[in-house]
Length: 358
Image (cartoon, rainbow, N blue to C red; front, side, top):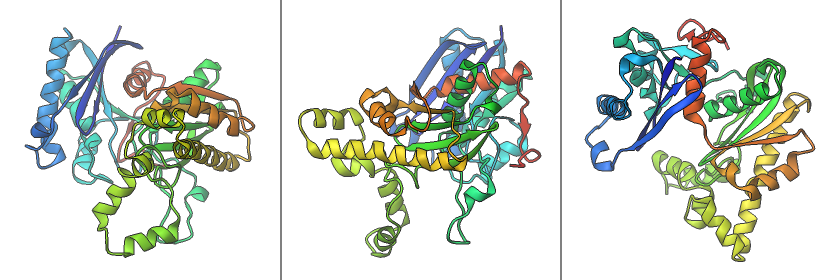
């Protein structure tokens, strides 16, 4: 029975889990206070601290490092890659450290996995990176030649949902066409067709969410940007951290907004249903890419625990395809099962710098 270490670094936490085959032995989240994080001026400066945290978790849980068959880390914001597994190599590590698309804490996931596995002679992987991009050329085109649509979203959880649905149907992933909706602090959608994520709606162009503004009227956004009140960082913060429910109600907690609605707040009811309408409209956008031939619509993420929100979305999209709900983020399981498929020979890990032909 092989044991796999899964690692998911977050902005203020480090999640670590050990799976024995597909069974979790433990999943633990270690929170990092701002005083600790403030000691590190750059993201990669946190690497040694977080690696030590993971070693301490393993020791506390009674798992020896030499018991591990592999380690897998959250895939960072690499320049365009495919979905699935990548072997952690020196070139991949160098790219994540010095040439990522965006400086983000997930970029150290590969380095953390490598630091635990490499001294033991074990392989380390990343899986379904945030920037996995298999979009078809026609879906990239915009009305400005300087811009093209990019794939960036909750690939790890969304692809895990699509793979899970295929397993439940006892069909290959490549033979099931699914639209997957991830509903969390941000909302993204993806279209899985013939074994690839051929289109995606990212959280800067799709539905608004608890903290994201989502797609905004372009002319009004240009006017806001040019008005002099906001610089780049302030405006980015406004649309990524202060949008959605935060903008309307001063909270990112959907439960609070639902409670407001249940107490008779009509504005809360309107905004909640508007978010669900936006989700449905964007699912329909993806459906036309495959001429409506969608087998399943899958809803996942933390907001999928709300029956109210799920029912509002189902009401509007069930005419397209049956709807299945996989509530929660499932990121640690997704990482571990991805690495397990590689170890079993069910999937081949790609090598970054050689296999990015999307």
